[in-house]
Image 1 (cartoon, rainbow, N blue to C red):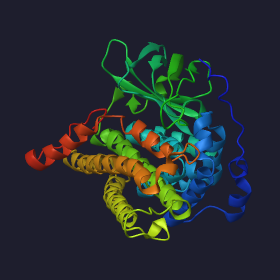
Image 2 (cartoon, helix red, strand yellow):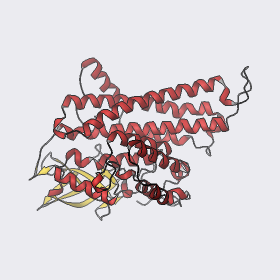
Image 3 (cartoon, rainbow, N blue to C red):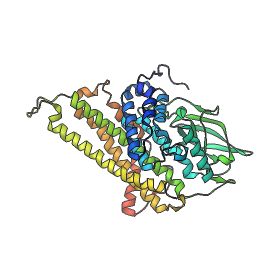
Length: 422
């Protein structure tokens, strides 16, 4: 299904259209702080017309090109192939920074990092080296057709090839990706097999049907996989048809759960920044309170309100930074050394961070209207984009289960069993 007519948009932000000259002159950052500053520069560009692009709901080709030109796409890529060679601790902060300017593009970048790391999670050393060289040298962006709530793709053997077929109702990255991660079950078995394939091929057909309340530019619509062929040698982690599991393989879920939490935090930070800017410039003081002020920013209840919201986001940031440092250490350590207990402890910390930023972020995205005033509800102001984005993706999996995971750890000393969502 093609996008509805009227959805096309011409990008009018010249910084998105032609970002390369500035960064080409500046060169690439040399440390984590420099990459986070680069991400904030990208966010500043995206924030200029984020609302207009959200409403147009056009495929974000130019936004992805901005990510490529900035160097952020290869942040985790090996230095010998032109990547930054940074760690996940930095990647999480980069995702957060980009999401402050545009939550959708923060999500696209976060999912890309996860799928770019998928080879390290499950593949052989030779496969890891090949995939990382491929995507880093070509500045490729990943998408993934791996929604676990749908039926698995079916895989049949045809000589030395595997043939993937089926449908997924969500596929973040969609047609803006260069590479797509597939996952399915081999016919007649319970064996799950991951493979990375080029996106641009006849057998991968995107419906263009993503039209959600928020996160509208993530290209998360449905996709059909029609007899996509992969050599058996490209089956991630398989040697002569056999897969040797490690606890490390199960880090995919806590890794992406923390991706979620960080772009949620970025969205909430963006909301607070936008609202406070509006209050400083536009909100009028209330003249009937008995303690009248010349400016709205001097009113005690606004000072109290913004102070409370900022305090919560600072606390959330501290918790997510601790979780990010912990899982980054695991992701960059030797794969064979990870224990089930350590994996579970980090997963619980991430669950705690996620549940806190969902609750606090939604409070921020709602309360800012009370602080900015009635006129801030105008469609032209656009504060709704933050609530829509955060509300949409925070429904990805029920937050009640994250609360239970933390409770089980506290009361029963139990760690979460690895599943597609824990």
